[in-house]
Amino acid sequence: MSSTKRGAFVVIEGLDKSGKSTQASLLHDRLQDSQDAGDTAPPKVVLLKFPDRTTAIGKMIDAYLRSESDLDDHAIHLLFSANRWELASTITAYLTQGTTVLADRYAFSGIAFTARKGLSYEWCRAPEVGLPAPDLTLFLNISPEVAAARGGYGLERYEREDVQTDVRRVFDKIGRAMQEEGEGKWVEIDAGKNKEEVAEDLWRAVEPLVTGIHGPINRLWE
Ligand code: FDM
Ligand code: MG
Image (cartoon, rainbow, N blue to C red; front, top):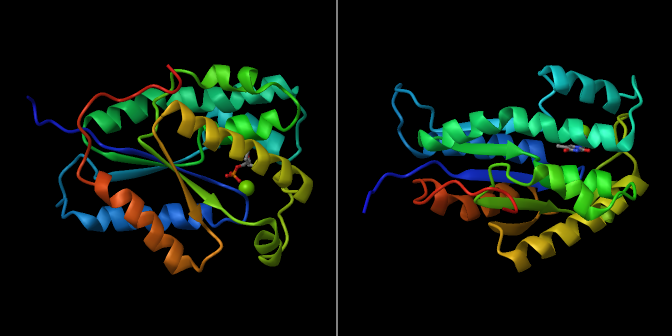
């Protein structure tokens, strides 16, 4: 049997105020330091962020989130999904060459934020089918009370308590479905603890994957 390993694909999802981006960046640095890669390519780990606001599609998403444009709920949903598809081959290439890929948000945010508007779960999921599937999804959970205690929301669309409450409900449904369907591992992390403790819990979940994974890259819901 071949001993060739590919990189692991790890997604960090979570509610607003859960410290998602901070933790993603800490995890990135820790993964980077975990193996002495030397100066040779390929990189040990890359951190992607969705939405990726730098692409042409990402700029349309950014304008929408800052309420500089209005778009039909279906149209913006498909743009978020297209923003992942335009990076799908990049993700696959990284994984194949042995690089660990970390993503700050992914298809699950896509489903959660649109389904809460009343569009059906199945419709929201459809454009995500076939994307590179994470080997592990870390869901940073935080109670509405702790989130509120961390201070106010920003000014972007969706940065409102009623939206966050609905989104949390859809995330719960996605987590249950992922566990029932056996679609890769979905691990809930208590993000209400302090920064160092959360980082340690994340590391415990990720460390077994650091040395790479045997087997093909899976596709979401296929
Ligand atoms: N969001 C994010 C979506 O509505 N759909 C998606 O597919 C993704 C990836 O965009 F409110 C929402 C979630 C959040 C907003 O995300 C911007 P960041 O992480 O704050 O940039
Ligand atoms: Mg935000």
